[in-house]
Image (tube, rainbow, N blue to C red; front, side, top):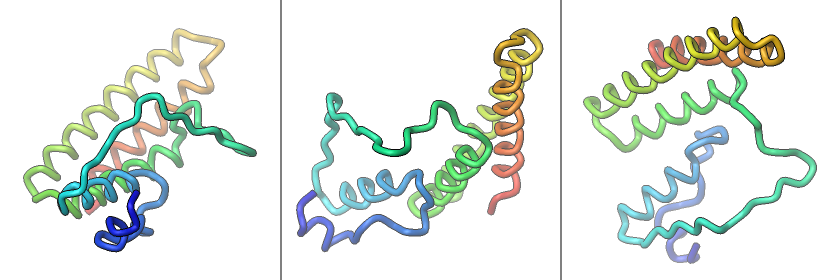
Length: 130
């Protein structure tokens, strides 16, 4: 990223905790006329810690909060509401799927229960979050 671009739009927004900070930065850059490029063969190596294999309750909650923050910052009430409905629907469907998976799979029962609980909590958060 060019220095002039960051000076124009600012650094990553610290209001985001983890997710959507880079999306927010790219959105602001694009709005100001900067070109955004996607490099599909790029890779990131985590040293010491690793990326999550799935979104547990904490990660999913942080993801939803950041998503809503991004929508609030950049879209009107109509689009915020539409995205929220889609996210709630997605969370409900996934919670149901993982609940079914927990009933079927003995090997992954604990993981599926945890994931189902996380998506149920995400749905509730999305319904309450202003």
